[in-house]
Image (cartoon, rainbow, N blue to C red; front, top):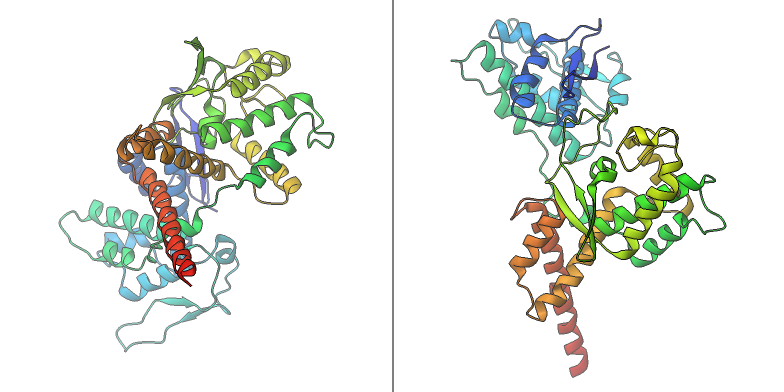
Length: 407
């Protein structure tokens, strides 16, 4: 079975390769990732995700009995019905695809005429794979196959890439349905659940309890991502200046001091964020009283550690959030804290804007900085639209109330 293998180079750079069923690197997929992903500076997580999709493509081609490289070398490019079959199979989960039995779930089209036989095969059941995932898969399928055709035949124009991308599902126009932040009651339940003074606290260990409480406060107060939180180092906390301490989130994709194979990454820009007294106090208590007592903690600068003194992994962080979810009885995931932070920011800056202390543009530039986005980021614009929609609904309700008053 093919597999994607990550490794760390002697320089500290992390990379991934696609291995065939015998454990040997596959020539063209890995050449593609070096030229188109690694050299332009894409992150290891992006490279691994695309290699996983290319691995899936080969799985589908095997199901359809198509030798892609041999076909392209001989200029027998994919036909329309084969592209339709690939697009259809891309809508299935990996577990479902592994269980497909050709005798029961795959239908082969009959002969078209004596000279040509349709190779396309159609899966007749449906699966619950998100449109976003299907869109990503077909995009990566199209990019790889298009590159491979150009690699072997640079002067030949084919329609494979265009046909595959045209079969991607439409992205939903309204992304607000996927936007979920915590309301005030949910935030209170989360903070109570991780409070070290809670008699029914989740974790027995003092270190784990205080560490996990700090994790939640960092998510809530800073609106940071998982990779940003797990990349924080004790040296990123600066001494007070004019009575204010700062915490710096740094982008460092190839940190040779990070022993984690699956290195958490800072996706957005570096920035320094001011800390209020409550968060500063929790940081100081954690660092001085609890982190310092963890075995081997002195061997690393990373802020958030396992109870064995190793930098905490993403899987371990996800487990913490899962344990909290079981107690509060709703899904506690990291990105909802980021949404919650942005809701609070919007409420705060609307007051400042109405008072004439800042402008809309200034507010959005500040939001972009604090979130690590580039100026005029589409991500920042999404939160602005949410605020605009909220104001529009308030106006709509006031109009309705106006009619009620007249009655």
